[in-house]
Amino acid sequence: MKLVGRCGKFYQFTAIDDCTRLRILKIYPRNNQKTAILFLDYVRSQLPFAVETIRTDNGAEFQSAFHWHVLDKGVNHVYIKPRTPRMNGKVERSHRIDAEEFWRYRCPRGRSCPPATTRSAPPGVRWIPEWVSAPLGIPDRRQHRSCR
View 1 (cartoon, rainbow, N blue to C red):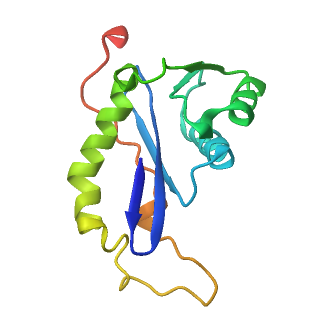
View 2 (cartoon, rainbow, N blue to C red; view 1 turned 30 degrees about the vertical axis):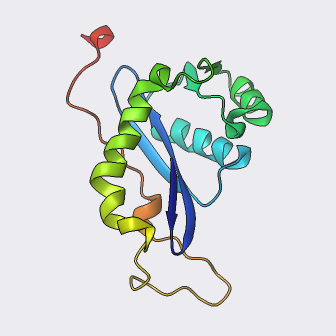
């Protein structure tokens, strides 16, 4: 999900486990294969279980370098069909909820994301606040049918 504000653009990467519905979110200043690889490694380090398969859309950030990195880690990589975001419904819904309940208050009308008054960065350093990169591992209370 792309976030735009006065301080620039941010990109939210989201991973949701199908069984436990555990969500892991992280914000990056760029949307490319390098950040997608960093996010994959972060997700694998945070989950208490092994990842067997990753399902992604067909975005440029999930192409060759990312795909080969996933395979090198021993994880299966599956692309959803082009132009079918409903096949990735949990993530799409998560992005919608985040946009409605969180980002709209943090970035009202795209003006201040994050608020410029929170902290000043040293000269030449672009600061990203803690709340932007904080992991959110908040499981949904509902349990997937396969886990019952």
